[in-house]
Length: 189
Picture 1 (tube, one colour):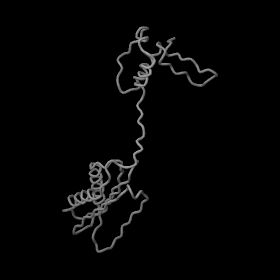
Picture 2: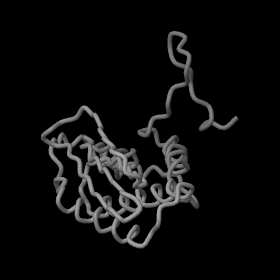
Picture 3: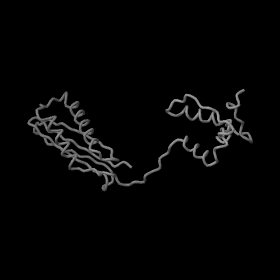
């Protein structure tokens, strides 16, 4: 039976097996192979440590070696403000430009207007994300309404932080329809 595969049971009838210790020279090669197998790098081979090379390591160097193999964990930043705040005037100009560019020569068609709203909202969303306002999540809604002499009232409700969250609307009007884009930027910690 292989002595690396065999681990002693925990004292007092524990349910699991005891982990191998990195400080025992017989277990070192097996531990390194197991840890490297779970990493993204390919392991071609590890050589067992002989008595002289193991004796060269002091206790502090072994701890350093052990921590270098461990998984990296990042600490929380506890940053409460974004690095670059949402600037409504830039987003409004960009959304207005996209609406007029896409809808300038378009006639209203009820069958294709839902697909057009979808593609315009995705285009506005990617343009706003490319502006680089960090730590924000966006909701983009586009409406296209046919002009038939009706009146319409559009309203939205939300609960958010007035200091960090913001919204922008852009409007494009042609002879056959009115288009409205609503972009909401919610700060995400």
